[in-house]
Image (cartoon, rainbow, N blue to C red; front, top):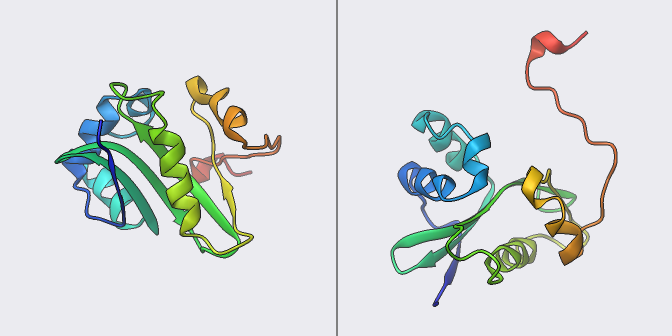
Length: 137
């Protein structure tokens, strides 16, 4: 397997959706809404992608200020090549783009909860999510 890693190289919404469909992350992303997917790509500050030839096989999509924090919003690797170090390499390549001292944060997918501590992430117990303004009291 020859995987090439690219930083902020164009990824189409079709390629991203096809990759998400090859992962469990696709269950939690709006893969039936190409406009939202394109907006996710267009408004990311940092996208590290993994390619086998012309095929997108992995992506790390982040929102960051590059200095203080980086939110790794999506880490997806095709199930065909998982457990071969691609996800870890995507994280490494993402981290290399950040300034010294910048912290990487993420919310783990249910099936990936055990993966992140295994590669060195520290658990943080106080993450909070507001998904609809009507929930605010």
